Image (cartoon, rainbow, N blue to C red; front, side, top):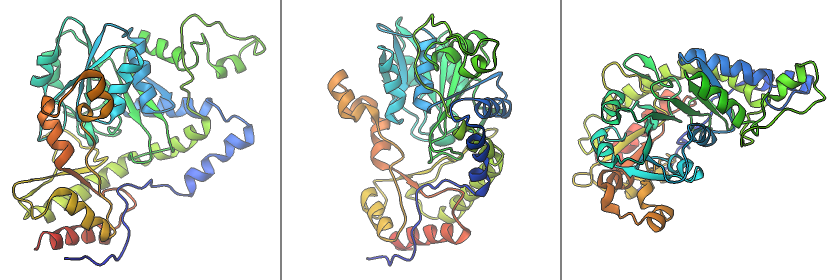
Length: 385
């Protein structure tokens, strides 16, 4: 069976307008292009929206995770528990600190870390557990806290802007959280990240570390009594700053965040209704009280009942102009982690299966109602309905 290609529907697409373009004009007019007042305003707006005391902008979510772990003092000899089904950046951030990422299996229904699996990985060397809110769905924080005890949680909220757990926004359930503004996320400025935390001391250290370890920021020095003097450097830091051009765009995008998430939830409801008759295709849901951000709409293709293997379904959707992706990868099956740590596919069997049978279908704010109907109709045609 061949499907006639009638359009092109991307797996994700940034939703921007003239407002974002115009927002950068002031940066060019003032000459303030690096981290400055626009970034500061974005930090304040993001922190307020996510009910956090501190927002600290970074160059991306990965550098945000690295800063959090480094500021917590995690280093060689330490272990950090990470779900195996996540983007490799989550585990890599642990390696950047010289620590060991310990990969735990996932709950196959949510794709998030399985608290029981995490509990089995805890040792005296465990210094943190990273709770990845994958695809915009909050991890079961209460269950994870119960097994963690005194071990701090770090939220990888790359996909979680605007999402909530039991009515509370993501971002303050652990020591700190890191969010992403990559173009596949609900709001974007090309690249960029945001750390949120309620810990004053941790925020102060992270703030310095993202700027080479400088005791004061460039903006503080520029507006201070002696801008011609360089600051003191007392700790090792990094150049993980965000530009004011990004901050200006981010401020406009922040104003659209809740509208974007509302629309994504409505479209997710449409997919669930229209695809419910396909028993071999499981659609994502959110537990009561949790607000899913639907950064991606990741389905499960049942290998025992699907009309075709997942990869063949993806190939046929591509031929019809519909982009798909696996949800993400199983980190323990990637060459770096197989070689370095000796992982085998069966070590995290649920993550292995998610790697092989998950399928993200298009859901983003540039799609029209006709686009969604076309995706549904094409999937049903492939299934023989």
